[in-house]
Length: 224
Image (tube, rainbow, N blue to C red; front, side):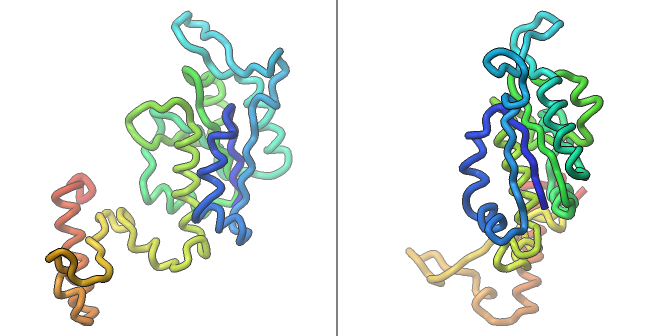
């Protein structure tokens, strides 16, 4: 998989893309990250990429030219399955979406910034808009890192135990059952006996019941 990220703040992506599972996936050759500074595609003085909105309201807007030049250059080199824009009013990222995105080969993620982007970018260049929640952040760099993480961790080989990802919360529209590790007793707090029984069938039934109960109590909308 190749993920190209377009941003005005490339330094904001260095840490999220350079550690843990994302780094291991890169080291294994499972994914390539290419971060592009949109200022490199500006023809304006001081490499500016924003301007005042025609509406006259407060704030600045990302201009269409640098984004267009960068995307057209990338598209001239390869086909992209999706060109994603990180937007508060996009589709809400969920596990089924992450599962589908993990199967793609080439993806562009455009990070929003300032007051937003010239709407013509969204109308003519973007194929999908994704939100990570009903709130607004300073820029789209953190959402881009979240989307990338959700995708890449599902690529076979990215996680040491591939079965682990299949039992994560939301994979079956259920939250994950509680998990425990050694010691079996600490400070008078004990691990449920069934988990110490060695009876696989009983353990699986307990896990399912716990997942169902937690989902019903904490996230009932998932059961709809």
